[in-house]
Image 1 (cartoon, rainbow, N blue to C red):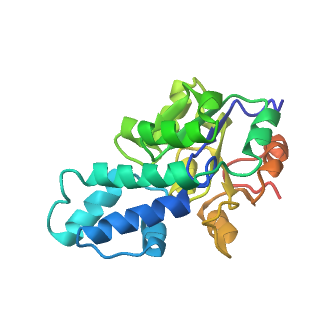
Image 2 (cartoon, rainbow, N blue to C red):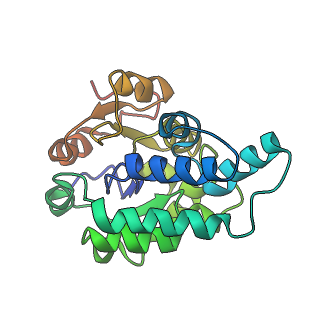
Length: 232
């Protein structure tokens, strides 16, 4: 066990479950249905890693009107339908968790209900429960540091002894703002060429695309590594 780290904080979508392509497709379909034409690629670039609350406020400001009262319900139903049909865990995440000796938790922009479904379908929920935290529990979602600081507080760990595993720029930015070390994962099906460089530019000290690499990366993080230094 690495004596320099007390907690590994995982994002959920795109890190534990390969859900980002599914989510962006569902989000684009429902938004377009309600008079805000947008592609799944545009959803990806604008809203990946951010909370639904933040995304909806931005859309409503541009539309000049509120989205329907049942918008969230429609989006949730479409998303969960596709999750049931297509969602899979990120390859090798179970074996990576087996090899990590530090306590782990989840800090996600998604709702608790969404995570119960996505993590439950992929046999990951029981590996993290009850240490599963949502942006709905804090005032400001990613890229603000609130969620990461909340998770660390709930786990009784100081921020500088936490490592965050993230796949989005808002997530990396939020982890850095919390004073934590951040590793950038770019092995999800949504990750395009140049994605690793984007995560490093946002502040990830190292990037990887295979979960089998994660335990070794965590072990490489020593006292001399700060959130501003690279592992290699």
